Image 1 (tube, rainbow, N blue to C red):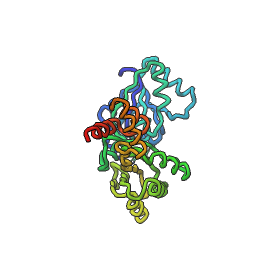
Image 2 (cartoon, rainbow, N blue to C red):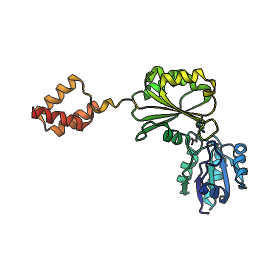
Image 3 (tube, helix red, strand yellow):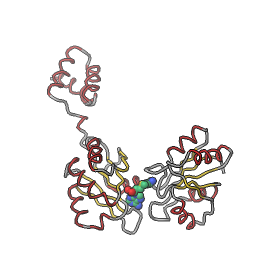
Image 4 (cartoon, rainbow, N blue to C red):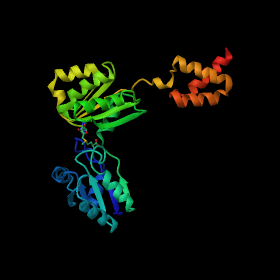
Length: 279
Ligand code: SAM
C-alpha cells in the first residue's frame, strides 16, 4: 500500500455502514491508530481485520505522535479511526493530520459515515447552506452565549448533543432562537430506534419532555436558518444616505459603498437607486 495517513470513517451504529475501500484499507495498512482500541476491536473482529491497533487521541504525548510520523516517513501506511463516523469531526485527529502534512506525508481522507451529514440529508431542512457547530458547551451560561452568537446565522445549524443535555439545550434554544423556529431532532441514526422529528423548537421541547425515550441515545439537533434579513432591508436613515450619495456618485459605486457599511446586498441597493431614477 502507498505510504501515508489514511483517514477512515467507521459506522455510526449499523455495522454494515462501512465502505469496501475502508475495509480494504484497514486490512492493508501496517498500523491502525484508534481513539479507543477496546471499542474498535469489536468492529475489526466483525470484519476479520487483524491489523495491529495503537491508541491515538489529541492528548497523546509528543513521543507517540512522533513514533507514528516516523513510521509513515519511513514508508508505512497508517490508518486513523475514531469510535464512530468520520475522524476529526468532533473527534481526534486534527493534530496528527497537520503534523503529517508538515512532514510531507500524503493524507488520504476516505469518504464515509458522518452523523451530521446523515442527519442533514434526512432532516427536511434546507441543505444549500449549513453551519456545523458540533457540541455546545456543557455549562448553561456558555451554551446560551454560543446560541446567542448563532441566533442570526443563516443556513441550517447542526449540533451534536449528549442525551442527558438534550432537554436543557432545547429549552435554551427555544428561549434564544424563538419557539417558532423550525428544528429537527435526529436520534439513533442507522440504529433500531432511529427517529427523525421535524417541528417547531417549542413543540420538539414538549415532545422530548413528555417521552423519556426521546432523551436516550445519540442525538443530532438541527435548527432552521435565521431569516435572511441582511439581503433586503435598509433603515430609513440609511436609505436617505443611499439616495443622497446617489445624487453625487455613479449608482454602482454608491451601492458597493453602502453594501459594505450596512451588509445589505449591493445588487438590492443598486436596483433601489435605478428604480428611484426611473420614477
Ligand atoms: N465523528 C463522528 C461523526 O462523524 O459523526 C461524531 C463523533 S462525536 C464524538 C459523537 C456525537 O455524534 C454524538 O454525541 C451524537 O451527537 C452524534 N452521533 C454519533 N452517532 C450518531 C447516531 N447514530 N445518531 C445520531 N447522532 C449520532
